[in-house]
Length: 197
Figure (cartoon, rainbow, N blue to C red):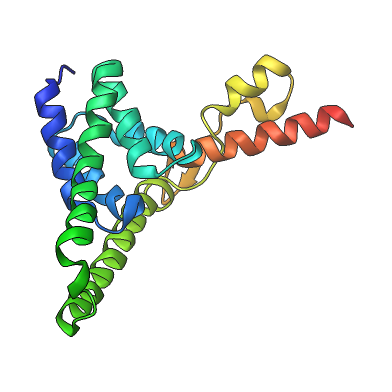
């Protein structure tokens, strides 16, 4: 999908403005804007990019913006998305330090920050429930789709190499992307351990 650099910048600037509570608080915001509203990436792709962003060093919001920006606009898109998501928090912290730093001990300021803390907890909980619904509850854990490719290259005779459908609620389903990647990693480790003994 073609996305203009201006649209990419404005979208990630909006995410950066709404990003309270760090990256984990912003996952739900990113999901709702990028997957639900804009439909720039699919849910499965969002989860894959989130897993990559979480496994690389640095804040998850910046890493997610970098990977999603790269996916949508290459290296320039990556730089634009990363800059746009980092700009609002940077300006807010700069404003707090220079403008309202002396007034932070006032009871009104303390009450505002207590309210923001409660909102942050709600955002993180929302992101957790969204990801839980899309990975565990919706599809369930099961044998991964990727396990076949991992095991079949090493030894096609391994029984775990065959794909398996999970029986759930009266119909067979494929496992979710998150469960697939998690189980594939575990199966690869088990396969390596078995070959060593």
